[in-house]
Image 1 (cartoon, rainbow, N blue to C red):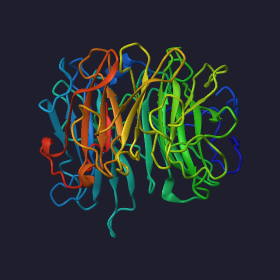
Image 2 (image 1 turned 45 degrees about the vertical axis):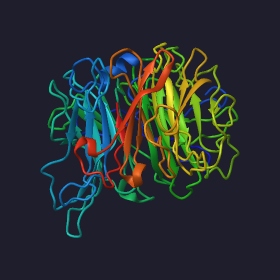
Image 3 (image 1 turned 120 degrees about the vertical axis):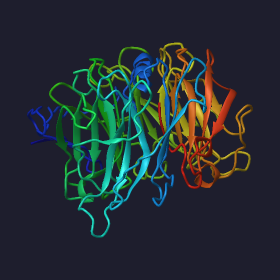
Image 4 (image 1 turned 90 degrees about the vertical axis):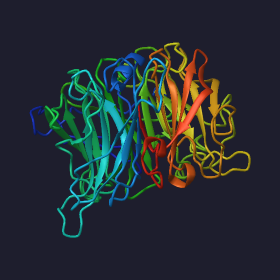
Length: 512
């Protein structure tokens, strides 16, 4: 077994050498222990271009991208927090609550409580029938006399000409997990043109047991079975909790790569993001991402997309938590974005990583502790110029005497990469935005960029699970040639969808 070592305060991935690509076999990826150059160093999202993004989002195959909104706190019958999903279908006029579908999980096994349907939503055409499918996590907790299994698993609502299937199908091959569970992403990581499911999970919650990386290889059957599967393990010494995962083609070879964020169990102040390059024979470990001063960078959210249109997707890390950097001085007060530009070797050999926070010139506001910049990241082209832009929430933003009222920023992509010129800033106190900002609203906890009217400009959707004391809400903004606009925006919540609103956390997860 070959290991890649980082400084002791950082987690380590161990990938065994060899290959096995048959159903049920153990995947043992290739290894490359080289760490990215410090000065050369991007959901959830599989897309690196607007066109592939639109294909990924279309659940009913009418050519217009759609939007799924999770409300994982929804109570249904006797099941508290059973969860629900609301789908708005795109059209030439964009999104409307009149074109909707509401999904719940009928027929659940009530002997084992299953909650949180509508969490961590992502979409891809898993069964390759031309219709995007919707994936959600569900939390299964055993009763005292229940089965010896708990943690998160994945379910799929399958796309079709009439929209998503009413009853979700559990995916087979999910590793047994417990707190803090499982994080996953969808993308073609082996180059066979079939979307795969890549998961990182903390097995048994035991620091002495290895964390588990699992790849379920597409195409999938509608019974929830993958064509094949494989696994890779994580170093049991100081085993990490996994904070986030994203896939995208960083190397420009047509195969999706993997960025994984994690935290040391025994040293929670220490975090890192590792890059693994995908390929037909498994992953090649490129090591921990470092900024231009050689500091290992951690974060809680990750998105991948080609911001400068050079053919290589870029890694955008949302460094949300500004309380844990006790050992290094990072420009992350109030949260931050850090962009690692892609290149043929995984990261650019010529472009340095860039930090952006509210103290960066051109960014509205001032960096204050706990603003949460980097939350709810999404990537899309909001003005139709061919460059992907980045939306980020600042759910802890204070203004007008309101604590944690929340704001969303949209930063533009360009030939020079992510720029702070022409940033769009939106809150509930922005003219034209429905509603009024209130204390603890946390507007911007999640975002999605979706081209629901097919005009090649992605509008903005903002999810706010905390609105109205946890009932939640969503806002829809259209886009013009100058980007996202508040004009014509609208908001709605669980009641509009015919669901119980109290504590539903409507908007906690968005899949576009």
